[in-house]
Image 1 (cartoon, rainbow, N blue to C red):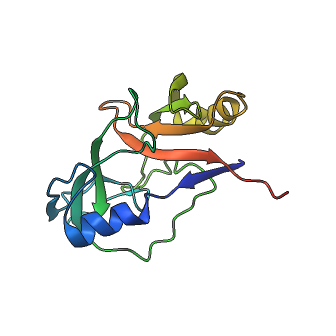
Image 2: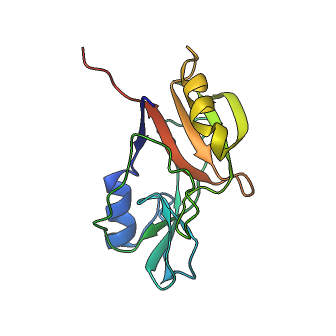
Image 3: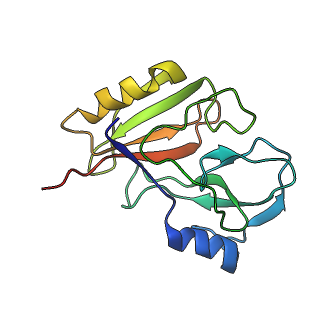
Length: 162
């Protein structure tokens, strides 16, 4: 699949881990994972006992009516985990699988307005993501967790040389 999963911005990770402040300039919450919290920085579920930070984050870059802030979990310390960014983190049956069997894919315009959205199964996710990114009005996608609607990751087209 010709995609790139965007990492959380380094300035956000530094701010929540070091300064203890989130995107709304609120204090972050620090705690030990129960296990299963979706860690946005490493695209996997937390293991019980891992130190986590819960902070408000906006995945949007522009002001406007679609800009929203929501909770994200990140590891309290930077990790050496290898993170695959060229394919969706689909389930493989492990306790730390990032997505479950369903996810929402939203296509956004360059102006950060929703142009399409689909509730998909894990088996359909890559094909639907490719279909949505072929739209001329889709600049990027967001994957979201379906029950609470929380931001999971941003999906960009992989830049092609030339």
